[in-house]
Image 1 (cartoon, rainbow, N blue to C red):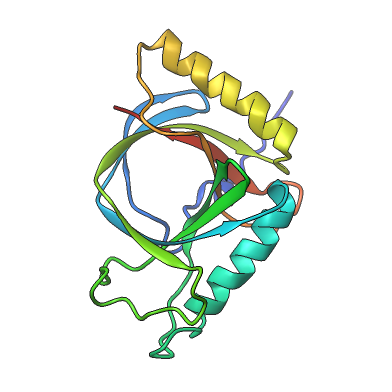
Image 2 (cartoon, rainbow, N blue to C red):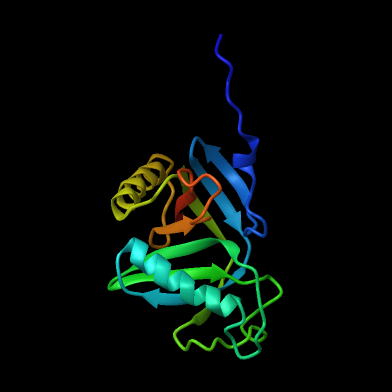
Length: 181
């Protein structure tokens, strides 16, 4: 007799994670509704892993008090990584209590702010180390899901990293996401 292994702790949403409402769920795919949000962003050169390490380090410095008010903020998952012409953009979400007029100015002049309007997002959930090759492969899967369900994309594909140091290192949570029109 086979007994199913259940690991309920793997379903836990990271503390402080960005809120959303699931509109459609089909296997590893979801369509979500996100509220308006506010992010800090930084452009970084390099491949997926190099850019993630460098960009996240600089953004964590800002969150840890590397700003003109020496104010600290928690890291709100996920960390977004968006491909650009000459590298990547890394984004971290700031607490909902902040906006462009109240967020402390970063010491790092390359960190910029952006308000993101409420939006619908198509997502392909996954686990494991996400290489550039895996990102490309999973992007194609998400695009096929969009075509199959007559959904139209309204942005570029991006990676959503939920942790780089999970308790189970072989199971880091990540997603491929794209905004819908």
